[in-house]
Structures are given as structure tokens and as C-alpha cells.
Image 1 (cartoon, helix red, strand yellow):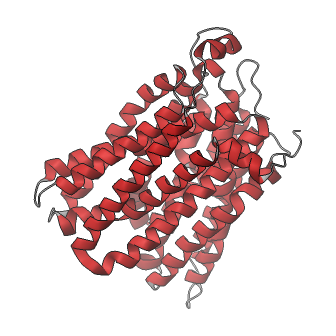
Image 2: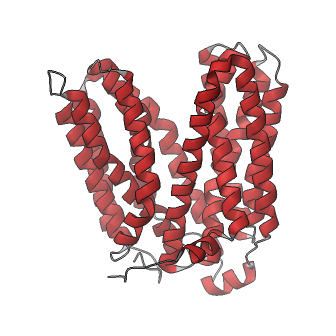
Image 3: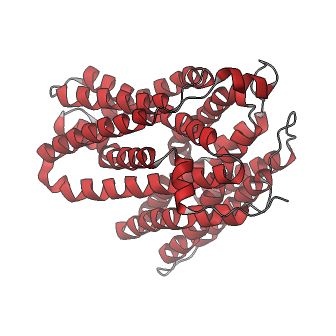
Length: 404
């Protein structure tokens, strides 16, 4: 059983990679919050594209972005750190520039813009995790990763709120938002690049002992695809259930989303520190159990009548968010702990591939199951998550790396 870590604010900033890198993360998250939730509206409202064409272009951007992730992993294993983070931001600057240059009705240029935005969004998590793993170690690294997620959620939430306030301005306001997003990414890229953090591949190879491949972690990666569904539950599954099945006011969906964001921002670090007394693998397995319990709770809540369904769903969503927090605080931490230093980049890239794949397929899976009723939706998610939790708990770690 590991000892509990306590990390001071200054040490936490250093674990981020320094104050400039922390500011870069905040600015990048703010820019993402300004545009990402409204990219579909931009294609439809500003460019006069059809909703299906816009959605296909955005999906293609995500898929191609995933294809580029292995190359990012190789770049990280060659020593890139802050440069890789800055590059992920600069690629999105190019995407925003293309977006602003796209004339109305030009679906191909919009697809190209979505492609570069997708590449940057998919490359960032692995690059950021590699930065944190280079400047922080042990449980301090886990706490820094958790704090980074909380900071990013706060920035994205603030950006989304600002963008929502500006939507009354119509197409012109969306174009301004896109321009501000591009400037935010450019500023964040300059700040990240100025950190000039790089790893020594030779030292990493000496620590790893050989030049072999990354650990397989097949059960962990497969389970992660299912775990990731929890990230789309507040954004997709719950609004779908509340509005179409329970016929509740859209205010309930908004309240659930806001509560999810606030809880993640405020509890991510404390819960991660609290869980640090247990092994990372045990905590990740526990996250699956909590998520399973929440899915069963949603199943029970949707059966309530006389107006009790929506309040019950909102209450259970707090349990789901807690499961999400435990998952997010242990998954990347476990992967970085298992990965030998000389293949850290490739291991993080494979983990990001599983995350990106889960995020890509979960909307389709959720919307396909929902019409068959609550049992099909929540029962399937509960069964798959519980099996994933068992797989995580029983998989054996390879080599000398420990999960705790």
C-alpha cells in the first residue's frame, strides 16, 4: 500500500513544467472551450453547410488525428517534450486559420480545418502526459496529472460559457470566437515552446535496459475504451434520456453538465490524493465499480414516474462524476508508471489511441442503444464496465514496473 502524497502549490506548478507551462495549459483550454463545442454550429451557420456534411468532416478529423498519434509517440521517445506540446497547439492554429479562410459552402476546406484541429486535439494528451512524467515522479506526478485535468476542465468550461454568451451575435460572433481561439492557441504554443523541456533518449534507454517494445497492457487498453464512455454520459447519454425518455426540461441537462464540470474542477486533485494510499491498478478497478453502480442507478432512476425521474437522474449523475474522477486520476498515472522510460511516448500514444477510439464510438453506441430502452442502454454499459473493471484488476503487470 502506497503512502499518501501531499504536494504544495509551488511544487505543483513546478510539476506542471513551470508557471509558463501552466499558463499555456490554461490559455489552450480556454481556446478549446471557445470553439470546440460550437464547431458544428460554425459549419452550419457561418459556412452554410448541411449538418450531416459538417458532422462527417468533424468525425474524419478525429479519426485522422488518431492515425497520427503513433508518430507523436515516436517523437516523444526521441526526446521531444515541450516542443511536442507546442506543435499540437500550432497545428490547431493552422486549423483555425483554415476555418476563417473557408468560403461559404466549401466543405473541403472545412474538412481540412477540422482535420488539423483533430490532429492537435489527439496529439496533446500524450505530449502533455510526457511533459509531466519528465518533471515529476511517483505520486507527485499523479497529483500533477490530476491538477492538469482540473485546470483544463476549468478553462474549457470558462471558454464555453464565454462562447455561449456571445452566440446571440450570430455568424459574425462565431467568426470572432474562432479568431480569438486561434490567438489563444498561438499564445499557448509560444509559452509552451519557451519552457524548452526535452528528455534524454540515451538516459531513458539506459534506464529501460533495452530497446524493446512498450508493455502490451492489452486488458488495460481494451478496458479503457469502455471506461471512456463515462466522459460522454453527461454530454450525450443523460441529455438524450432526460429529454426524449423522461420528457424533462432541458434545464436538467444543463444542470447536470455544469455540476459535472464543477465537481471535476474541485474534486479531481483531492480525490486523487486520497486514493494515492492504494495501488493505481486497484483504484482504476474501483472506478469501474463506481461507474457500474451509477449506470445501474440511472436504470432505476429512469423507471420513476410522477416527475421524480429527472431529479433522480441528476442525483445519480454525481456518483457517475465521482467514478469519472477516480478513473481520470488513475488511468494515465497507471500507464506512465508501467511504461519503461525509453518507450514512454509509444505507451502513452497507445493509451491515447484507446481513449480516442472510445470517445469516437461512444456517441454512436449510446444513440444506437437508447431507442431500445433504459435496460438496453444502462444494462449494457453496466455489464461492459464491470467486465472491464475485472479485467483491469486481474491483469498482471510486466517487468519490474509496479502499479502502486
